[in-house]
Length: 425
Image 1 (cartoon, rainbow, N blue to C red):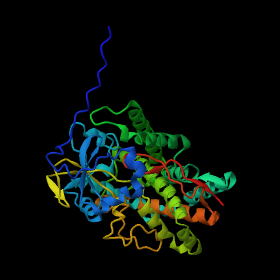
Image 2: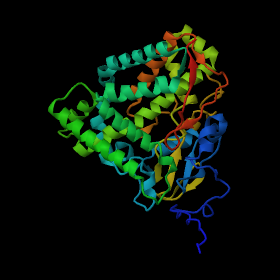
Image 3: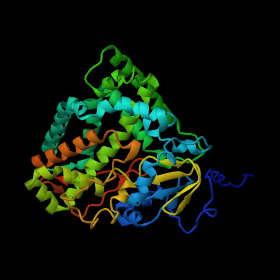
Image 4: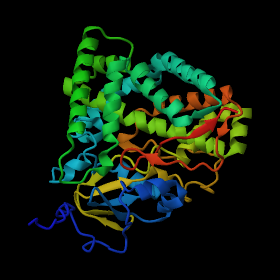
């Protein structure tokens, strides 16, 4: 006689407080990993957070706080004493470590963060970017040539943004071999599965194996570049000196891994999304054709309307505190949404109007404070050059379906279009 099947016990709640202890009426019922949220995020859902005080959500089963108003976003980002990027040592919080235990300046605060960031900064200056422009421009030109060959139909994500950004980051910036590039791409694919993981459960072996492969690859790359430095971002990080100090091998690994895995998807998402936004707003696309000097404004507006995702790296309260009238217990995860803040009517007049002449200086897509995106100059160069080249090469490009609505995938809170079907004319 067989025993009746029983459902597995629900995962243990590792939250620092219960909703009943806080404010049950200030709760948003969707997880950041929810496909319902991801697929409907840009239909006004996330924008509505810009007019709402911080509220409670669950992510990976853990009760957290979301901030969407621009002033609340800035408060969290600018106060690293109250809100740290370092994951607290609490059972179940391992799932909130984006790099699976690997060291990254993106998850450091204090003196160590400041030291590493100072050593990294010269590699991301305007002069540092000049060294890769020739290769980046070549890759963009090759992608445009391919679209011309396969057209008129092409996919702005698969045929353009995704491979273009991967190659610029890994081939032009890091000067990696195809085999090494493939290892980083696999790591990116494994990280995209993080939204489905549950707090308290072990990471899957495929994620662990991908991380080990990246470590072996970086060790090999660093060893070769130490012996024979080149004109590339990795060599620049290896040779960086400040007050007689340089990056250790462990620090080099962490920063190379985080730059590659964090930068590829976010920039590709924004590029594909930007192409879609311009094609949805034909009058603005025509204005940009006529006045190409407006490209910086166009990039800013594309970032505001369709940034890389709903949220960015999680912070954690270092003490019992509050933001915008919402209580936040110590160690509670705190998320902020630059995507929501971009529609804050207190900072952006008529925020739902797409206007490439708009002044977007207060835009928060690249963050602010000590963790402001170090790769902003590289990302904006890619966006500006790729969009300009596409419009110049295919002046009559358009969406294959004017009513097209993309499906999204990606990391937790990320908005990676699966496809953006286009026509060159």
